[in-house]
Structures are given as C-alpha cells and as structure tokens.
Amino acid sequence: MGKLKAPGKPFGISKWAVWEAWQKVKANKGAPGVDGQSIAEFEKDLQGSLYKIWNRMSSGSYFPPPVRAVEIAKAHGAGTRMLGVPTVADRVAQTVVAQALEVKVEPIFHPDSYGYRPRRSALDAVAACRRRCWQTNWVIDLDIARFFDSVPWARVVTAVEANTDLPWVVLYVKRWLHAPVQLADGSLQVRHRGTPQGSAISPVLANLFLHYAFDVWLTREFSGVRFERYVDDAVVHCISAAQAHRVLAALVERMREVGLELHPEKTRALGQSGRARLDELLRRVLPIGAVSPPGAHQRLPDALAPQQVQTTAWTQKGAAGLGRGRRDEATVLRPLGLGNCRSRRLVTRTRRAV
Image (tube, rainbow, N blue to C red; front, side, top):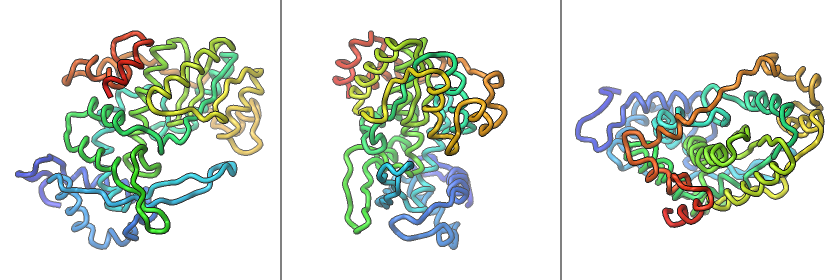
C-alpha cells in the first residue's frame, strides 16, 4: 500500500484507514451491490481495488454508485422492508468515513443508546429494560415509523458538521445521502430523505441524529425519566399514567418537529402489572415462548440478573463537549433544536435555522 499518506491530495485520508475498513467489510461478508461484484472477486485485485478507493477519496473525486434495493420480510410476518446493499468498494469507502465519525461521536452518545455501538448489544438493552420495568409502573413502548426512509438530510448533515472538523467526512456523507437506489427492475429511484438501511454509514448517522432528536432532548425535558433506545425502537419508563401520557404527547410533537413520526400501532403506553408488562416488552426480543422471571431469566445470561447489572449515570459531559474547539455550543446545537432556550421556543427556533 506504500506510504500511509500522500502529499498533494486535498484530503489526508490514510491508506491504513482504507485497509482497516476493508478488513471490517470482509469480516461482515455481505452480498454484491449493483455491479454484481462479490467480496471474493473484489479480493482478486485487492491492492489495485483499495488503491483506487483511497486515491479517489483523498482527491475528492469519489462518487458512490447506486445502492441495490433488496426487499426482505419483516419479523413476525408484518410485511416487508427495503434494505440497501452498496457495492463492496462503496462499503469500504463508507466504512472509512464511518470509522472517522465514530471516533468523534462515540464519547458523546448516551449510555442508554445500544444499537450499532461498540461493545453493546440488544441483550444489554434488555437487561436495563428488565431491571427498570420492576422499578416503575408505566412504560412507553415506541417505534419510529419508517425511520431509515424518512430521516431528513439537512438535520443529519447539521449533526455531522457539529461533530467533525474533517471536510471530507461531511462531503462524502452528503454524497451517500443523495445516492439513488436501484430497484429490482433496474430503474433508479431518486431519494429526497432517508439513509439506506443496510449501508455501512447509516448506523452512525442514525445514532447521531437520534442522539439529538431523542436522547438529549428527553434527558433535558424529562430529567427523571429513564429509557433504552435501540436505533429507532425505544422503551421509556414512567412512574405514573399521567407522566406516561404527558411524555408520550411530548414525544409525538418532538418527532414531528424533527421530521419524523411515531408508528401509530406500535407506539403505546402500558401500565400493566410488573410481570405482565415485562412479558409484553421483552417477548419480541426473547426466544418464542419466553415469559417473565423466572422463565425469561432462564433464557438470558446470568449477568442480566437485576443485582448484577451495573448502571452508568450519564453526565452532561457529552452534550457540553460538542462545541469544544469549534463553534459556540448554542450556535452548533440550535439548528438541532438543542439551543440554550426554553422547550416551548424550540419549534420556532429550529424551523428558522434549518
């Protein structure tokens, strides 16, 4: 691969970063994209293929090809969902950018965000949910409708710009957001919102957007309310029916404010008894037939027992550190609906800024 960096390139992207990205793409396997090239075929001329990606990315001339659309059945037989499959080369390029962005944003993410994050899993989310379900009487089980198809680009780009000083990261995020989708009949579908579910860059973009749209907002507006979020699914714990309905109404408005919508059938406030409530919430992520403790506990690792789960108290370090070394925090956060203003003025201020 030669030198790690080359003089005369507008962007200082190291060849080592491209190599590490390739290692991740190879380990994840995956299907071919629109060019039909498999990982094995890409690897036949590995040095040339990786050099081409590095050369184009570091010179600013890399443009992503269309994403191949693949329709798969949803879990529990609830229709189908569309996944986007980039080419192998594009997955490498996306991983280069995703890794550079993750270094910046991982330290600020909320500890109760679990999806697509290093050293975190769905079982970690279930463990926290299981413990908190026995501590509060009401929960909000919420689902964001068609999140990956609906997330507004302008707010995604604003969040990226607030968290990186690397212009090539912002440049390529914009290009991937605008990349068309190739349908099964070969036609191209131009998109105006969303980020393809299944691409390498989408997970970090989804978490970054929802960090501001959901995590930080909920922590600020309802400081005593705990939650677990796994990308676009979340469980919010409330102490009473009044609080649950108040928080749910605020969440409906908040999602509208940031260009999203809660799924009307999958989002609900639950106030059942502890055992029944826990069954309802965890059944979808536990094996079929699993029930609440001791039944559910027998199907989970021993470390998920309530007395063994450690709680990480989130400080405001993450949110406060966003503007460090860059712009004033209020200037950075205001377009995201997080400026230093009272909650009732957030809607007006956000609409003016974005």
